[in-house]
Length: 228
Image (tube, rainbow, N blue to C red; front, side, top):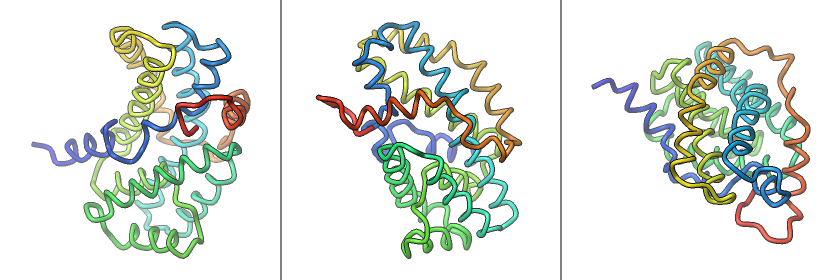
């Protein structure tokens, strides 16, 4: 059995107890406003979130953090975490990324401990940085000897599962419809993982402003099931 594969499955498990189920990344706003309302619109939301948002934010940070870990460059990792804080404009998204990151670290630090992850965790404890989920994901993927392409593929797939699961609950959709959306995204996920292997740092933060606006509007929804 390939330990790297098992580590990847563990790291990307949608049921990992880090609180991911509590966040919709603005999807709840789209549903309440009647924009995401059926299988087709849920698929559009998910594919656009992956390709027009995550590709230029979290997936790019994961990829660059993985490279920095490869080079044992803690200064770069700290810079990436600070930049991640800066590009997450909606307060709820910054908080979500921080909460998920801290919980991921709590789970995987005993499993993927090395000098780099120890220094990263120490900087978080001293409040030099927040500690973001995507940066921590890249560090622990590297520490557990998961290949970069597989880590990115798993990261995108994990995000897609979260969006689809929330769509099934919120729209609502049938479980079968949700699985059909996931099947239809396989090619896109593979393409995005390939593109994210060498992200352009100049394009970080180049994402659809509409997603940020919906996340900000979520803070003032009359009723909410999700934290973001």
